[in-house]
Amino acid sequence: MKEFMFICLLISISIVVSVASSTSSSMRKNLPVLSFDEVYNHLFGDNNLVTNYKDDGGKTVHLLLNKRTGSGFVSQDLYLHGFFSASIKLPADYTAGVVVAFYMSNGDIFERNHDELDFEFLGNIRGKDWKIQTNVYGNGSTNIGREERYGLWFDPSQDFHHYSILWTQSHIIFYVDDIAIREAKRSEGMGGDFPSKPMSLYATIWDGSTWATNGGKYKVNYRYAPYVAEFSDLVLHGCTVDPIELSSITCDSDATTNNLDIMSSIKHTLSSDQRVEMMKFREKHLMYSYCYDHTRYLSPPAECVLDAPEAKRLRQFDPVTFGKGPSPSHRGKRGPRRSRTNSVVTI
Image 1: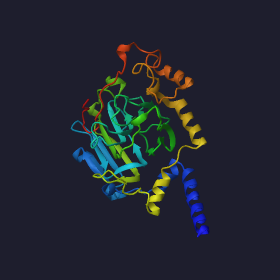
Image 2: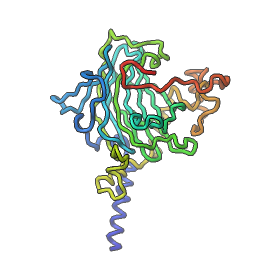
Image 3: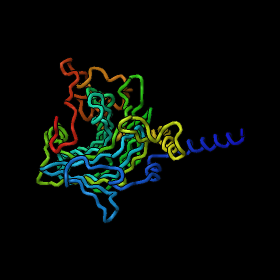
Image 4: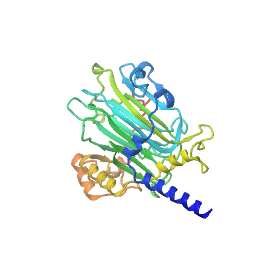
């Protein structure tokens, strides 16, 4: 009996170690990609959501934005922790004011204390690059927007690229093409603002003319419509949750072997090599971080760990925002939370 238990322990350790050393790439490639109808529902946009069943069995989704409406879809299930990924190709040419989002949220269930994890892609005028933005909301903490904004080392409108979110009980990691670009840790400073309630996965395209490009200076020009965002290789891998009881269905303590794999695959953080790769990305491409925004905050939010070289680099982009602190009258400068479910932003 003792020998059997020892063998089981060795097997369990080997599973955890092998998974812990895996990357976003191996997770993404080894997880199933299901057809749209199996795991997603049409959210809004009528015929502006198009699936291709003839060529790929409905595993590719086109979201369109035109003068009439944007479009979007949502996962059929709620998830508490997991790995969520998509290959996305963004619209080309003049895309100012266009916002494409790939994100998790529970705002439809928890209206006053919702959680959210965002990838937002912000269009631009012709000749200027798309920008990518990540955000973390927890427990309705929209008064503290934890945005970061980046440039990219490629043109996201020319081909598909991979965007992934790993969400565990203690870490949130955002990946682009399997390179970690941001890690948010549960900390005492963040308190109850760390996302901790079940969320659905969403994808949308919508009109963000009032804010998305140079603070609303450049609007969506519907002469270039329809704007088409293409989604493929959609992966949802995590603990599904009953929408009524809000309790775990697949990740209970007495889970089956398959469900044990689900738990194991989302319990890891970055290796030292991945962390070095993330820092190199941030040195080259980070353009904005809420932690250094003196216009919004007299002092950084409690969870922020400041880095002097990073602060110096950001001042090159915006010496006012990342320079000296503002007068008290500027404290908390922030617009209301944005909605992604309408073709016209509902700020």
